[in-house]
Length: 317
Image (cartoon, rainbow, N blue to C red; front, side, top):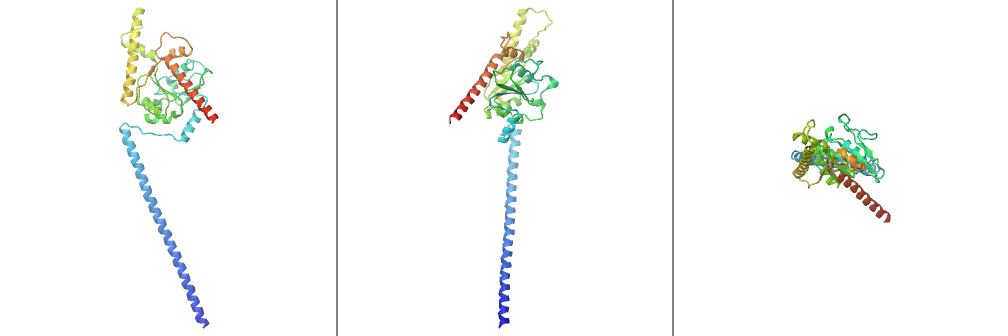
């Protein structure tokens, strides 16, 4: 009897153990199946992601080939990093002068700061001293809390036109002067386009007006070695000056129109004349130097007043 009872208990225990093993096996099978399903889902999602990325890439390449530049928005971290790089301060107004290399950015900055190229603390100029890195210059007149930035010329860097704006961190500046010398380029258009996106005020400026006018005079037959009377020289100068101004304004207008951008004024200046204006002298020959300086000062004062009003409203709240 006892032997029979022991046998029954052993059989029940074996049956219970078999059930546990079956449950464990089923659970393991379920886990393996779930893992396989998750892997398949992940693989499918990865394929879909790659498909989307490739589609975006192909679309960007298609647009780029068609002349449509992709929109690249900097991240919050990139903005902060750019501000640290340029030593951005809320109590200052930050002017950046950008454009193609050789346009005379350094010389214009010197003139706007009331300095000649050869003066101490002036921005380096010349073919062998072309700016390859962003340079920061304080204003010599403490009355105007401005900082000027000489941005590396697009021609000195292997950066596509549409990447130049972001690569140089131009989105952190308060105002950007787009400076050109001989011709208005796609780089200039790209800068203006991006400035509109970021609501950054811009000023299109053509430099070296005095040199260009002399070149037009030569094209018209003027020879400085000839003994032409002063009246003839003045008339020729006025004709060349007017021709240069009209051609410049029309050229910029046409370029903006071709790029589907709104019309915008171009300021025509010479650095020597700008220096005289900054030093509060009244130059005999000037084009847009006085108006450019006044507009830049007004832009900075307006922005500063706006910031002061915002600060006062925040304090009040």
